[in-house]
Image (tube, rainbow, N blue to C red; front, side, top):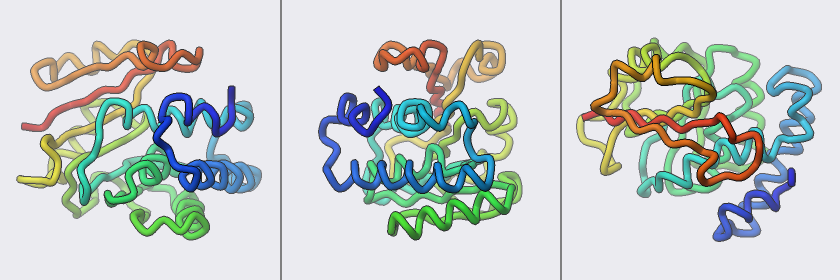
Length: 209
């Protein structure tokens, strides 16, 4: 199954309008991908499972309160930020990437999808000067690097009942997480998602006290 139906499979509460946005997002991204390499060519036929649903797995474990400020580091073609912004329309998402042409694409996608709760910045993560509740990212860097970049960005007292980093990772990540055992939770996505793609995929939550 690689169509918008896979989203309804796991998120049955998703509205027809949201499904329409996911379909338009996929369509526009595939068109852009012919000009700029945003996702692997072999992944184009699996965009709903490997990219959109993968981004949405965060929403299976965490529900963001209204007005939560969320930062997506290394967003690339808008993952996981844009799918999450569609699911959580009352939160604000800032999508960041150091590659200018990718932010050009993301801004075009934001405009075409008419997403009022998303903005994009062309900047390196370590140079950001904003405050957020939560950082999300997808296979961008090591946990050490992510925490080095993110730590100064968390609000002292935010909207969410927690502050922290949500990182979608793959493979063996125990070694890179070993310095954070007191604050870290690792979720195996295969426990909730049956597609083969999720067999080795994990969601790491690093709580910031």
